[in-house]
Image (cartoon, rainbow, N blue to C red; front, side, top):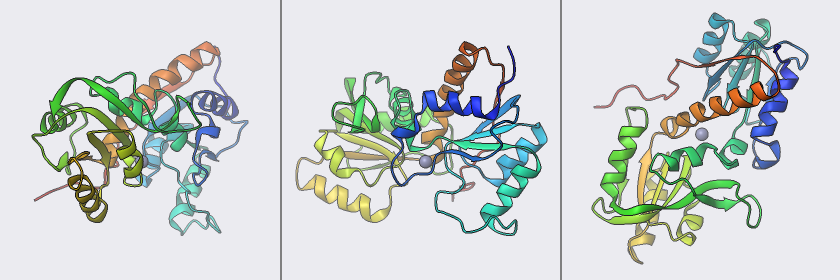
Amino acid sequence: MRYPKVSECVDVFEALWPTALAESWDSVGLAVGDPDAEVRSILLALDPMDAVIAEAVVLGSDLVFNHHPLMLKPVKSVNASTLKGGAVHTLISNDIALFNAHTNADSARGGVSDVLISLLGIDNAQPLVPHAEGSPTGIGRVGDLPTPTPVRDIARTLSNRLPRTTTGVRIAGDPAATVARVAVCGGAGDSLFDEVRASGAEVYITADLRHHPATEARDTANRNDGRPQLIDVSHWASETVWLTAAAEQLETEFAERGLSVALQHSAVNTDPWVERY
Ligand SMILES: [Zn+2]
């Protein structure tokens, strides 16, 4: 067993979450780092926030593996006094590489939405928006509960199985409605209502549901049969559960290649909401 280079870590990440599965607008892959540098430890986190980068510095991590990109929008400079430039400077001056798998990790089998829907005991879910015709990969998931269940019981199950958050789990629609067909999209999924309706989902679980998309989705539902009911969870919570599954996959993949690297979960909670009254 030997330590991998950054480039070999990228090969492992690519095998699990191929760049080809990413949406065209996305920014995924190695954002900062020298492909030839050695990696002894990787810190896994959801967001490349300053507190996560500071944690990597303290821990002596060689690579930070994130879900969300540091630079989704193009930047024109990495001047250290800018938000993004400051992060890039801290990473480079501490010899820390930064890699992220975003919509490619949403799309992959065993990815973000698969992990989210499996919290409800649904293990054979299909993509809500297949990557290609008939593909088992793609954005969101839809599947059936073994037993029809009231929406409020699903919300309570999610509340118990997701990490505790300030914003909690919210229902729009009829909490007493009994549903079996479930659609999910980890992270912000309010652009997928058409696909959710087309899938026949009776409840849609996603995050960051805003007032207008939510009220319009409810009116659209109420003019038909009232479905889908909506469950809104914390963006952070809906995706952070995936990191545990990702770490297990990484452990196996590195070992199969004869590579030794320590994997650590960030202890920083990057959910921005801290109190509610
Ligand atoms: Zn997200």
